[in-house]
Length: 328
Ligand SMILES: NC(=O)c1ccc[n+]([C@@H]2O[C@H](COP(=O)([O-])OP(=O)(O)OC[C@H]3O[C@@H](n4cnc5c(N)ncnc54)[C@H](OP(=O)(O)O)[C@@H]3O)[C@@H](O)[C@H]2O)c1
Image (cartoon, rainbow, N blue to C red; front, top):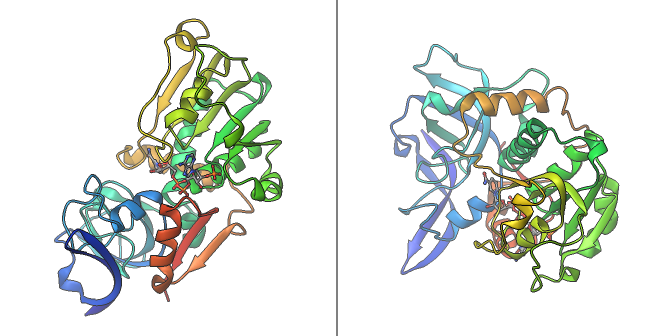
């Protein structure tokens, strides 16, 4: 049986993305075959689709770290044909063919039964970006962060992780500062619940003094580099930051002072390899107490054919919000 899929091919160190028909026997030899109904685009997919060997070692390859669909067959007792399921992360889309194809074949240990009050399409409006925002929030709430503690921030806020972090903070009653490089999106961000919008270019990133004015009781950083270094110095007593991204750089330039004089906690988030139970907890939250009514409104639906253009946009930092791939 043939299926449609995006294939990234290596050609003399350049990488080409094309849509092809492939035979299903090309899928890896895993125990659970899923017909994909929706996928979504994340920054990591763009890295995989552009030849980042830290993400994907071998080409040709099908990226896509997210998939929501229907069990076609599985040797697992946990699933029966027709069950609606979600798969995110682990090796999918990295070195195992991913959700940018109409079918995936993955180990049952990666698969989650979709919660009742969340549709397949909603699940991919969240995708790994949403899961990551949820994992950040889980850490901050476990730390004890509360709206009364004061203002929180979200950096890289117009991106996938950023937007859902903003909406979640708002849903939970926090006063949120949105830090962005796209001031033209201010109205959009305010409509999503941002109380303040700051242009990241106005932060003095070369002046990282050990301690700056304590402005934030916590936050979610999807950028890393100098922005995170700066924000670390701007936190108040007993603050907590959850960091997950590196679009702004890989290094962290800071001092010990925010940690030993203000008791700052910095949480690192790795959504791909999170325990399946932890992922289930977040998906259940998205189906209940963290339900975001507007999640479907702020999403761009595209076909497989439109993916290469959107991949290019996310690589250039030009993407706003989430992109969902919809199959027929
Ligand atoms: N650790 C994990 O488990 C995990 C999971 C998912 C994603 N991530 C990482 O989190 C980051 C965000 O992912 P995403 O899917 O939200 O990506 P995205 O949709 O591309 O969003 C990234 C946002 O960061 C800002 N940005 C882009 N280039 C920048 C630069 N040079 N300096 C500062 N800010 C910049 C932009 O927002 P503004 O213009 O609004 O500032 C952009 O929209 C990526 O590094 C991704 O790899 C990590």
